[in-house]
Length: 172
Image (cartoon, rainbow, N blue to C red; front, side, top):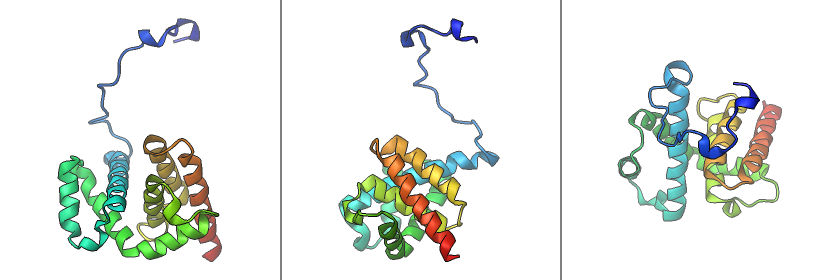
């Protein structure tokens, strides 16, 4: 449609709020959309853990299952979410050191909880997990930050993760 035919008012545009992407494939067998949902749910789980301090309370399986039921986490997203969380918990000390080195002039505990959670997920995926390509990880984290975090978070997360990527390249 040429620009001359575009609606002159947003009020004339159809309401798309009820539309979903259910059944729409994004990537091979829809894995990209499922992984995004997994990352988003993992970020929310880590955010919750930050405030409830449940890390020492033991039963991860119980907390994970309760979270998935309470927040109706997509069943297809749960396996990757679980592997992310298990890996982050197992490597959290090293992940936090990497973030602290690369987030210049920011103490980890002073970062917004959403930013800290997203950075932990991304650093895990780049350095410990499936070691995904840095640009893929950075893009995913920035897109999730646009949806869940503050207005300055996407550029902050991009900068920190770019520094992580460069540091990793110089070490290898």
